[in-house]
Length: 155
Length: 242
Image (tube, rainbow over all chains, first blue to last red; front, side, top):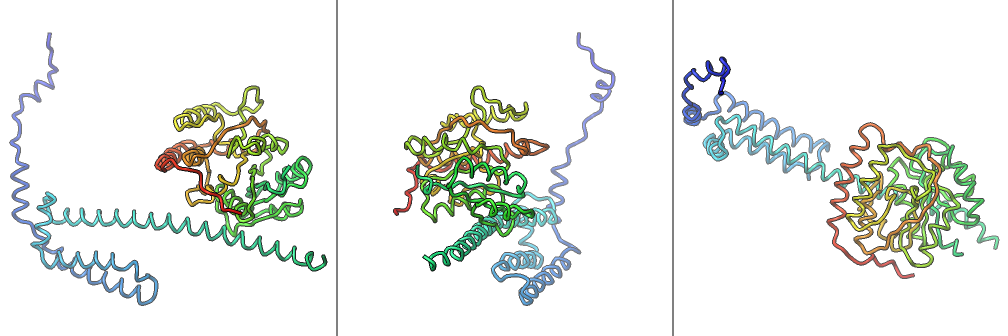
């Protein structure tokens, strides 16, 4: 005996909606443009570039850390100016909109930089530990010499 | 025997209260043995108490962790060219009278590293159910790596120069050196075994086993074991010729 729930039967009676997602995707892809975001990105990347240079000038940021940030600002600037480049990138990763393509690349960049800093911090932690141990040992050695020296003289 | 070639290392962090008894016991049962207290940035009277009781003191400029304190001891032992090293905790858990038991297999050149075992047959040392489960898991894991130890987390250990040399390496964890370190040592061809050493229930015996600590503990252990297993099997590190 196969009893179907009345609600199930009712739902099954509804004709399925035509799947228009492909149509939607194509229409989005036809009209890929940054629009108002374009001058915003250009302005932001320029301000960011200047900020990095300013931080280096007042020695808050070491030169060795700047290339990656300058590169990020520069790439934002380039894709905003040459929009067709961003469109190509968006198509390549299968993004429907340019903003999601931008978010995608920004996120990848942030994850990589976080990992990079975690690695650097691990190394620094190890170096600090080794240094602290060295200081402790040298201090103890000096104290020992200081207490041993007078004894030697008297002997 | 060669007490001048042996260094007793006691890492201590804010242990002024317990350290007095530990050092007094050492002075009584192991008279004349050099004792090194590694003060891990204590804010209490630990270094003063240690000096008062005749121990040599090395002071970390700030708190680095239990493992780092141990390693400072190894590094000092290496500089001095000490042949053997005994490490024991400052909380009074380990008994000085057991040192000779741990040292015997080293002096007979049977082992490179002897671990004091709290849980031998007939031991009066009791741990909680959670600890027992954890220890069972650890024991099984140790066996996977070819280590037959029933108490691989014991901090009461005696080692020779080859182990000291190895433990001075950067792999040595700053927080809690554990089974992973023993696996690392074994993969370097060092002989590891254990000896029964009765212990008093330490006042901090269950510190590791509260809240999320056990979870994190096993997580970290997994990662550390993974790293230890990645080291190729090799010969023991050559100790510097003296």
